[in-house]
Image (cartoon, rainbow, N blue to C red; front, side, top):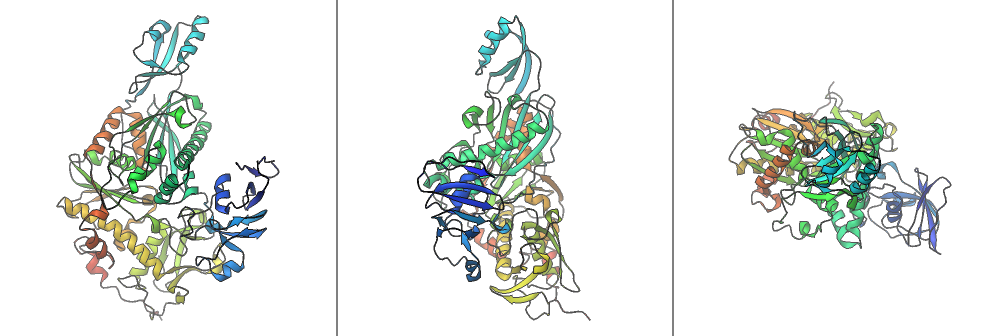
Length: 627
């Protein structure tokens, strides 16, 4: 049985005698579904985005919606406050429709338009692509040692009837294939794609000229099946055809950004002859269609992951490009080190460095690599949830209205904030939380354990429902009609995440017997990293002090890796070399992890990681009102 969506008065045909209509506001989209379908399932069916960190298991409480009219069946949950329940709030994953209903999705539950990072600082590269275009005679085409793509023979026959003797052939030298032929020389384009847990970013590339025409990005449609990797893997394993659904969601997102880019630059979809893809290991498995169970089978032992790249046919994937286009997926280096990290490495040039350098890619998970041209060692810190706003009282993604940076007035201890798109604040995103903790710490509003100085006299510190909290934005200034606060529990979760990141860096340094003084360059990659205030990150002890290092923001290094492997076979070879040489450390299996992790719970962290700041921070005094 299938449901369909409509906006306005478009009709829907549904094969069901007991179908119910759900109307979603503010999107003005309706869908007919069988009685007993949950609101979340209906939203997924018609592509309406509702936050669901746990993938619809009733654990996270993020999928709050308001039922404005009609009948549902649901059950009580502690994730809803009594006053919310009284106002018609339900959890979309628990509420089953029994008659026609109207549902409002409040702003904090919407998957809004993101500020996504699709810009990358690329090294200079001499184009040496696997794609090329050569003039050929029809006679030599028949004798070519390359295999002929679908439709090439038929097209050649038409040219022969028209007495066309010379054609231009688009070649894929890596696959030894003639992809297309034309009567005139034409543009040869490729698409580079970064499949992130949260977003998909893509770049349209003129391969012949070695030039990136432009970039675009969208939320990964897999978000509808859960915001975290584990939820999606569980969906793939537990639902019939779940893996195919997730693969389809990723492909649909890629097709959407591809169409945007081709329309913007007036490039025919049929002229896109190659796609290169980078993603973390889980995203790679779900895109390629590999069984992801080995990735979560046991976290007490290492997972065996192939370090070879994947080659796929675009037409088999349903990708909206030339039917003979090939798809190259960058290799992974471990359970938690995917092609995105390999892309980061080759984009930063860490693999060519003569001296030790550090690479950090902060996203839903945080990848860390230490190395040089001769060796690489990497790991992943499970730190993403707090930095993505999960589990925090007013945490949101980096969307319009999210508070992205904060300072605190040292005289009044009032928060001064900036929101994305200068919209009314609806919550705080990751970079804002890091700023906030740093400012609370340096202004003497919290101690080294992240606990509020309750008797300091700050008018913005008060006792709330979950203990003491700091009012960041009063209700009259917000876009949600209530105070935006940070609680001690929130601060604990932020410290937990930052400690995980710092421990990952510390362990890699320790493995290689080097100190913060030995690292000469720090590369900051990823969407989150590009907006991160590095001073705030060091203040709270998330990233160690590196006294002798220069710091460079790279942007989306994963997309950079996909672009470089599209433009240059040398970089493709280098990506495969890095994947095979990378030593992968699984943090949770490392005997030093707990000691390093726990050391970070006292701000900022261990003295050897913060040789000057740790001592200096001990001179901070609790805030006092000024006359």
